[in-house]
Image 1 (cartoon, rainbow, N blue to C red):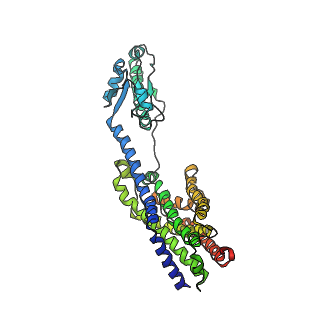
Image 2: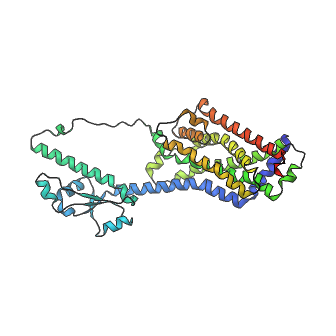
Image 3: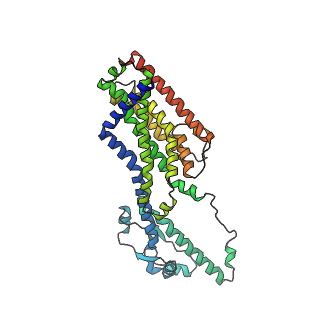
Length: 388
């Protein structure tokens, strides 16, 4: 049986590699998309950092507020006049900075001890301008605090009397944990690479062969049905795992292209993390290969199998999102759900945590059980008259 399974494995592997166009599209979508998204995110962050380093405040009517201008210049900011049609440019995302509008009676109200109203104009649809709102707000709060300290000092009151409590922030997250927040996209992309790598191979080796009429001659061989299923499953799992390995390794050179120095320093994904990801994905690749084969073996055409496999693709895509919506931390049952367990464990790898046997064992057991049950269903289906 082992010899027959090996023969079928080589035959199915050659057939999967022969369809070069499909294989190329799977490689392009699974291997290149992850690093490309990472580079695009880094370019976005680099643009935000560049605008923050420019230290520019776009304002209208700043000539009416020399006190405020003096404060901004002492903070090493440059005041730039807003264009006349700044509202239209903000709505059309042509202006990448919020606009500070100063009223004409700013200094007069300040002299009377009243609070002038300044407007900070932006647009929620303009992401570039929206990111600069927080910085301008912090500058205005600093100006308010400075003016308050000067006023109480002139009246002989100690400035410290304005602060009843001193606040000091302490972040318990270590650098590895903060860096893991950036790498949350990596587990999703590598798992989707496993899925799409095994999807086409699983459908082609079952429903595709049945549609082409090549499955019946294969069943006419004296080889046991278990050997046929084992060989087909091994080829599908190998293709899915090959795509996953390439996807994991693609992030290694991909991080060299990061445009943001801060992200490059935070993003920690080396060869050790890649090997840990591959080890965690091995059982999942086997379970996915068997499950997709079990779904497609009952279908009469490749298109029908694709439609039925959509349920698996949708569930597999949505399960990792539970970690995003769950704000109460990891639950014990997360480690018993395929895809969700791998996402949780890969997140721990990115945080630099050591994986214990008790944490990895549930996901491995569930994947093994799922693979065996699906393969048994495929073997029983091949022995029945349902193929006729």
